[in-house]
Length: 159
Image 1 (spheres, one colour):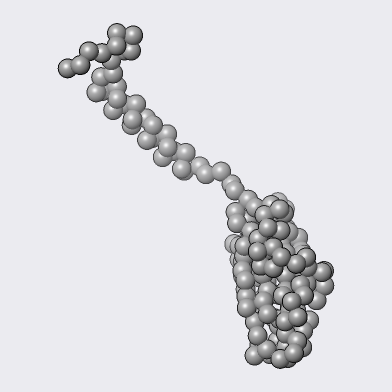
Image 2 (cartoon, rainbow, N blue to C red):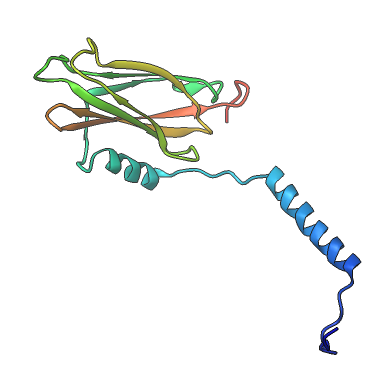
């Protein structure tokens, strides 16, 4: 056996097993109580810039959603864009972001003139009260946007 440094105390196998087990237990317990992660307005801007680098103009798109959502797990959303949906003028895509969710991206929906109406409906999950942003990309490459704050309550009570 090699010579050991007399200034470093020897660790027994039992001490090693107890220390390792304690570390694994602490890591497991930390996983049971995760910290809440949330995007912010800057994350939303970065994500929407990836959708299109141009700055959107407010208007032409409407976010239909409740002002107060009693259940943040299933918030009904309707996005409507004012567009004739013809071969010359149509909505190419709609992107939606939520600034209080762990990731800002909610959805990107591609449309074409074959869609008779520029309207989509879906349900989304909101982690907490937050502002959602929708951006519509038109066939002439202009961008239009809308925002809406949705208050999420817990069990129907203010929150």
